[in-house]
Amino acid sequence: MGAESTFDAGGPDPDRAAAAFLIRLRAMAAAAKQGERGVERISSLAELQRVGAFALRAAVAEARERGVPWRELAKALGVPVTTLHQQYRAGHGLTVPARDLDSALARLYK
Image 1: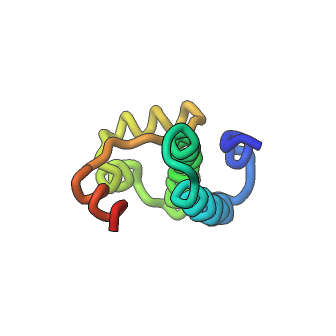
Image 2 (image 1 turned 90 degrees about the vertical axis):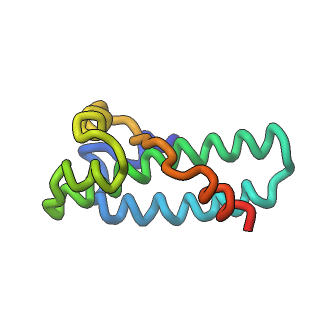
C-alpha cells in the first residue's frame, strides 16, 4: 500500500492519520538505521521521505480542522503560504526545504 492511499481528503480522520504515519515513520527509520549501507539504505531513506511528505500533509489537515490559519502553518514550515496551499490542494505529500542541514546531520549522527 502506497502512502497516497493512506490519507486523502475523503479518507480517515487527519488526527488518526498523522498518528499512524508517525508510527510507520519510526519503524521505517529504525529499519533504515539497521539496514545495510549503500543502495538498500538509500532506498529506505527515499521511502521515509515519501511517507514523511504524506505525514506532513495529514498533520496540516489536522491543524486546518482545528482552525489553524494557512499563514501560521506556512510560517512554521518556512514556506510561502501560496506554496503550501498549492501543494495541499494538489493532493500529494507536502515538501519543505531543510532549514539547517548542519543541525539535522548532527542529530542524525549522534
